Length: 301
Image (cartoon, rainbow, N blue to C red; front, top):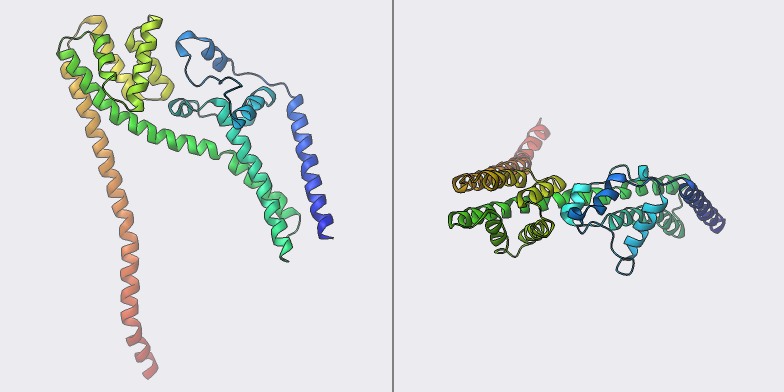
């Protein structure tokens, strides 16, 4: 009886999965026109484009198949800026989502089968509903991971950008041109932030774009307002020949002050949260001291 129930559950799940995949395959997939045009634009040929099939991993192959076969509305929302700053290809992201969802579908039936072996059987509806719920939750796990990792990457980018702005200001003060100052400053550091800036400036040189326009486009793509402000300052220096040494130093100082205030506010919030366990421990300690006296008093009466 138990084997027949498990076989019926597995057969029903496979049949339902086959029907869903067949319906999705027959539905016409509408490509994202903006994404397709951005990949064809010469100045936007970044690493987010799909890798060659020979270099693609298993998850990326799954993602490429999903982008061609499944409707775009299935993904609900794609964190494009977060993936761009993390340099995660779109195919790998979609492959992660489908892989996580597949694990969510498989884990509850396996747990139900294990509990059934030890004599703790569950009704069929429980693992079926748990599979759907866990698959839906795990389907959005890559979104959460991308947003959280991108938040940390933006914070690191802002910290490195403050140092980069100081270096550009020093190069300008030494008489270097706008492009030369930006490129020399980007070659000083070896972190991924300086490497990203150096790549963007090199790309703008070969494409004939002004460096501030390239950084402005990068700021819009990655969601970095500090980089956008820096690009505006360099545009003022490049197009109008204005002296921006004091402006750049003031901008970097303001960025460091803002980051310091954010860290102080976060530290204060953590300190306030730490007072709650301490207060509870104090209350419990006082209760342990007073409890014996209260018990003796009530027992005597």
